[in-house]
Image (cartoon, rainbow, N blue to C red; front, side, top):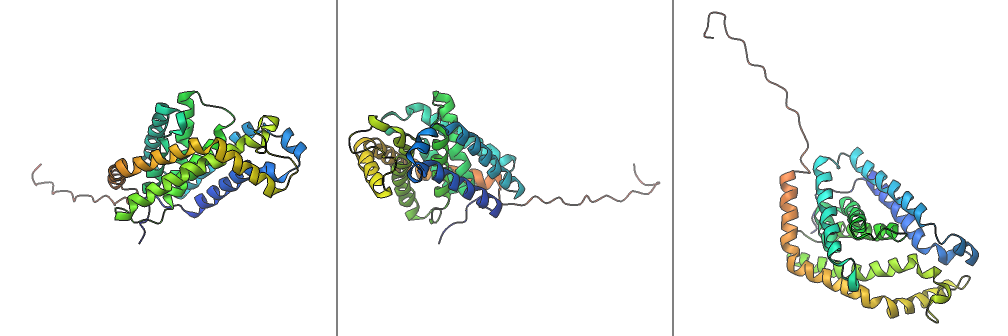
Length: 279
């Protein structure tokens, strides 16, 4: 039995998130499907992707607003999750791959739902970038990946408070720590050119299988040692502090009463007293 999230994803937000997912997938993989000259000419188009992603995030938020799911209480929770994630990133700034920010993103998505998880992940990584001076062409790709991690956490098939919840969420944290690195390398790997290690670089015009083989070797050699500590750290945080933080988020969600509709009761007027009665 799974648990219904506090703020479920409605169909307008589903459509908006699906568009973001398609755009993100194309942004990471397009060099594999175009000619070499086109890839070299458009390798620095990340600012356009950043602008497009911000617009799509606004569409996701608008979809949640029109569905009645994004009110002042939800915005406050998003602000807290983004600030907490950004502050945690300030502690390490990705040193040795250690990024505890994802612990907050995963827990927020697991409790509050996939839509809030997606937006909180994207905002958390943006907040962290602003705090650490890490704003660059990699930022839109980080926003997509972090948002995807929060989205996936909100879709985990796990019962709230059950014995398996902590282990399922910890396994998810471990796996996404690796998947994050797998995707993030793709924002720059196709454009390394001759600076890539021998046999590990992107070859424009080569078959998809050959380039995937080159990238797999590149990832294992250069990135796995950074991504594994990220996944292990967040999995350990989930096992040790996850249950307490999950309870805090759920308690706050209950008090905020996200799922309770607002009902305005009619005003009942009191009858007027007789003129000769007491004043």
